Length: 500
Image 1 (spheres, rainbow, N blue to C red):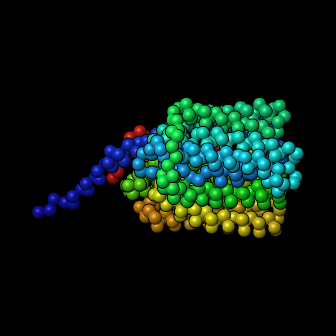
Image 2: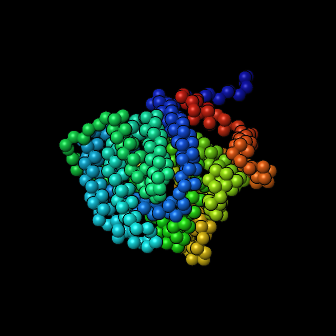
Image 3: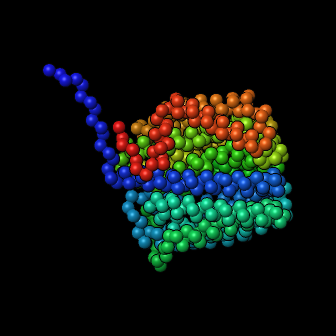
């Protein structure tokens, strides 16, 4: 005689090693999240002051110098650090020393090239003020500090010690903005941002070496270097393509729109893509964490899904704010001189609604030892970006036209990323849970534009309006996705939940 259906047997907990990794992932995300909140508050206050003191042209000059610097930096790094983070075995002292000496020699060579080539490189932008080559040479000093922090940083990341990293980077941000504000108040203009970057790089490099003490040995293992280069070249190829992709802004934007137009474009892009800071935090935690979970595809898929859902919640809330009350926010906080950025800012906001996916999926593919997939994909979307931006700015040389052209590759590239994730890791299916966040985005955009907009006249009313929109967004998301609450709690819990 049947006694009824047998209740399902709960799945066993993950192995202790996986539980420990998941616990460190959550602690790392929590530490970097707390750092991000403090850092963004510091950034917001300092940027408000700098945006009022500096001009769009100052930001445009700094963007050009920064791009020129990044062009040289990509050739001074071949991805050796990430190759050791991804490695299953613990790196040996010989490998770490080889990375240090190789990077140091490469960096000194590139630094010498920068000092010689600076005046010739900057001739691409004939409208730059006199003496700009010294801004590039000064910014090049950050390169040496970056080399000094490579090994301590990779050791901390590999061991998921993101609490220590987060504190160092927060105080590095404080160093940057304190230096920039003081120098800008003294009339240093674009030089204030350059010198602040040098101060920040120096502080972070020195502090990392004090926290994670390590000394190189006088060894150089060529066999180990060849092994690391196999991963590193593909990984760094992705970084090179990222630079090629992003160089469309200072090159096409700087030449066709001028320094003022480039400053407007950068403001629109950076403001709309503000939530990407969270995505990069999660991606940064995810790479070493996903690498430790690569042996357990179910746990890896669950971690990817959880990461994407959390990032989507934050990103789409901010997109809704930009679409609904963005002009009021900028006018009240940054001043009216930045309002011309808004046509482009709306376009960038819509693009980031899907654009947040690629950093997370890229971290997963890197962790699985397949950086060549993202490398090839980044080559394709770099070509698309250049073609679409050049065509768009040929029709109209405006920040809006530039933003429309730039957003084409973001949308197409992230749609491709979703398909690739489905093929490589079919267990991960996070897209089905993104609809509530998308609907919440549309809801608060409508409430902000048609109900709250006329009432936002100052800092107090703006703060209250944002709180109202946050409550509406979160309420709708929890209503449509009951699992969201447990997902958010899981990020903060020290002990991972049982798998059903």
